[in-house]
Image 1 (spheres, rainbow, N blue to C red):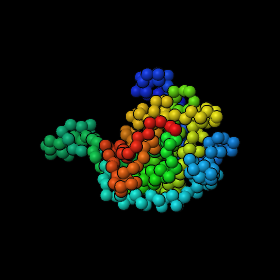
Image 2 (image 1 turned 30 degrees about the vertical axis):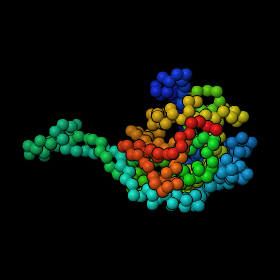
Image 3 (image 1 turned 90 degrees about the vertical axis):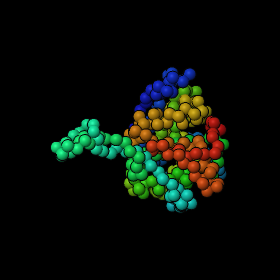
Image 4 (image 1 turned 60 degrees about the vertical axis):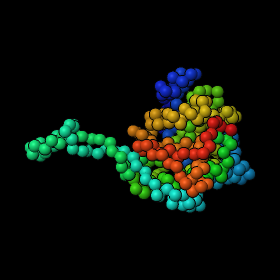
Length: 304
């Protein structure tokens, strides 16, 4: 996996108390990330937290969850079927560059010019379309007060969204988390690029829906990447400022490490829940460019 540090973006460093903050990145593909999950020591607290008797991590042993990361879980994939019909009726438009005829532009159209046509130049413009590529980044960090069944339902809804979008357009999917550990004001970002051409549905569904992946595996890699000792239990939202900063600046922060996130990205923070789509069958989804915002009923203000 690719590990590197960058100074925090200006919007973060201009915030009181964050002038020296930095971003610590760890980015890899599915095979690299699975190998790092497997290398977490059996004595590590995050790994030991994953057990059949711990419902906070989904009541599954670490090794069993790791097996599903490698092999997938068809049962988890099937749970997303419930939400497909609720999403299929919706339009998901985004922007892409197209070449159009214009009176001014960077490239001439010789036949049009010779014919005396006023639109004799060609210009690239962004236009709304339902087939432009999308980059979806799912942050699976969550408040400690959120129960595993809630994470499972939310993950099922996101899995359905990815399935629907990847059927009609190129989709890049990253799963991971952004947190701050210990007494620092730095942020650690660990993300895995999933296979989406075609979509690896069984493995994607397990990583999106099961609490053991976020609270056992990704949290363990965050400890490793940040250098924090496993006994340090102070797990906070990025920059120790609650969820507001990461929600406002996620694109600017993550696009420096994830090339598919340029020029804009669909960021789906897990610190929210999918109340409307899960309880009433409705889904409030706001599309701005290729920014997809799942509007959720409860806003989480910090880690438990």
